[in-house]
Image (cartoon, rainbow, N blue to C red; front, side, top):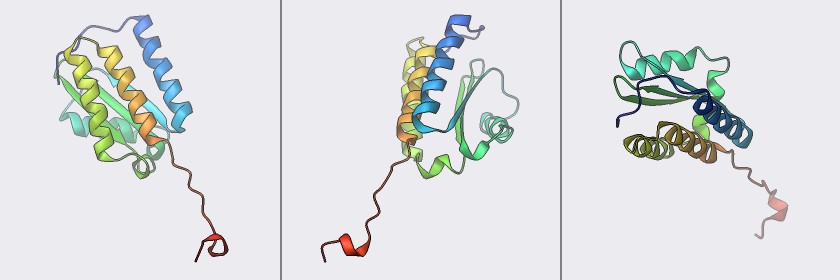
Length: 135
């Protein structure tokens, strides 16, 4: 992961991330969480532990950023994975990493959150009975 600021986020930066989370949750109806801080152990295991402690992990997406060890992880719940592929998560990770490389951590998180939400929107399909199919 590219270098991100290791200090605290400002109130304005936290508010920007909160707005992105609210917009994402309204768009796709899944819950988003962002953890920015030091992880203990391996980043993936730490992120999975955080994710499993959420109120509804099966319907949640967790983004974990450790600016000191330069780790970035995304963990998705079982219900979310029905709508969000690993490839789509990877694209969001790349977008975040690109912004982080430019020194824009908040913009990267905002972009990643909104990309994940866009891809996680459940697709509504129209089920047509056999009497309506031109056979």
